Length: 252
Image 1 (tube, rainbow, N blue to C red):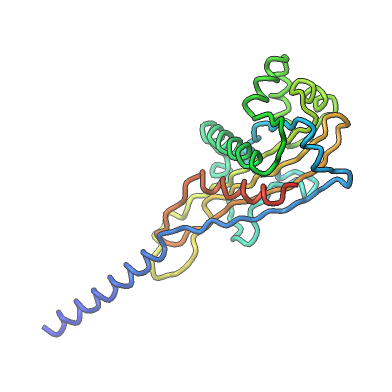
Image 2: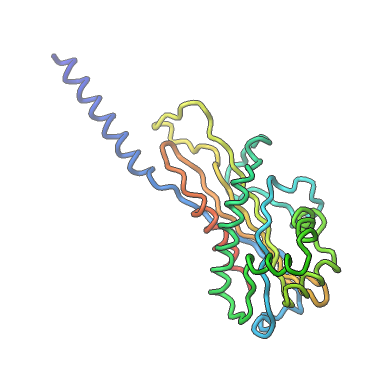
């Protein structure tokens, strides 16, 4: 009888601890971080009020630019988080996921830039694609979308885009989404350990002057999180929103 009472007390005590831990781990904290890596000394934000600005759809990278020679141009995992060894199969996103992220990030960028800038003639990503297509630059845009992360802008292409879009300034952005699956082994609630990072979204943006072919500004924003045992992963929109918010904060 004593054994039965003692057993029940231990079971109730363990159940109470489990409920407490589960309730405390229900919400996943998404962290943001941003960095401005370049600003031209001739950059004048006031020019935006007198000239059109076009926003191209976000270029979604399937994996980090590991071969980039310039450190500032690399897409790396978020700082202050555990460095996770991610296999090639985990890093590469499906075509459907890439399209989803491109749409989500492009719409978020447009919405938040409209709030931040007082640009009277802001060309949305959708309108930009339509204008390029109407001017017969569809194939040129496809090549640009494929090659820009590795080769940057060709001055003639930049000028052609500016004329087709009827804008002086062009905002080009690229994003990488790192996803790693948690370990298959069971994570016990009393270990208090952090599981491996599940998703990091980093978005980098550049502002170009199409008239003289010069880059005016560059910066990047990151949204990332780690999961504790039994935490629920946030939606992709939440992580992407944190990345965009971090970028917008440092935009001119």
